[in-house]
Image 1 (tube, rainbow, N blue to C red):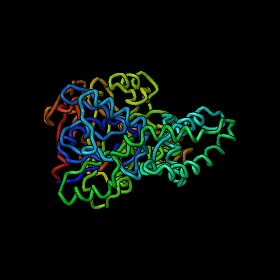
Image 2: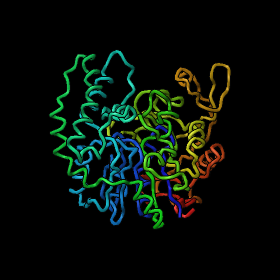
Image 3: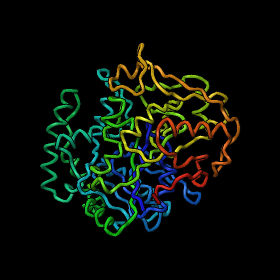
Image 4: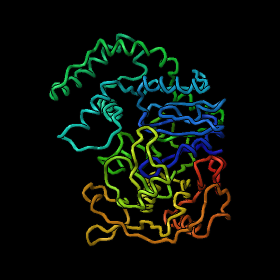
Length: 430
């Protein structure tokens, strides 16, 4: 039985929720390994809709263990609110089915405030952040001044850690003409919620090793998408963590041999939220039509997503960088009523033709897509569950993506419903 990592393979919003939900039903342990509450999954189980931001998808199912790894940055207030909301929906959450890494970094109100100050500043380019403090929290983690879950257990140590944190933040705030942060208020606020967070605290690397020895099925759940990776994405218009499959190891404390199947979630077209380069973006009626049919609005932010043609160059690049073994292709039904469909198969950069997205931001904005045209199928694919029932032109479209990217198509999603899936390869049985 495989341990599977599920990775968004474009700019996020690929429809991971449905796929992870299907896999989490069959897994024993579901593990989040990076990101924060800036990423959202919408799950529908037994006709009940659950909106998750920090909690792993396994939390809504009985007899599953959910883990928030050390690679995640945690807003403790947002987490407790999310737990409270799920409990109102009848989900029981205890320290028996939820573990939080004791060495995970906390997001504090000062991080959210700094995020907003930067985004609103006239002296910096807008990155299009969710203003939830994710970036500043990761900065403090790398700067070795972060407050971590374990710090909540010792008041004296917490006080010293906050002194280090405020030395940095108050210097920044002074230069921006902002008020100094009140240390006593931070401590009071953290003391109020510390017990409720600490009861879930565990050395999760140790628990994962125990689960491996018991041959439990592990599902590693990524947030955002590979093209938002801090190293491999469209920098600086990226998130503040590594979103590639490799970060599952550092973000949980398990070795590379733990995961033996990487499933890349890929939308049948391309979308992006916020600023940054987007070579195949459609700023026209077709782009608007795709957005409406695909209900392209953010789960967390409700921001309208930018829409464009499928960029096979970028997906192939993602497959290489993350070692993707199989693609779960989602939302093919959104393209049902489009007569002429295009796929980007290369770029023009000046007079040169290239088959990858260059790292330089200037070049990322300059590249122009080279398209291959496909005849649309102009028939409904919604609800189809078997490959043989797909229209011939839809089969040609999917088969081309498989050939170009050099990766198997493991499943095709034909509606938001979990059961409306064409399963071609089961990653849990590889």
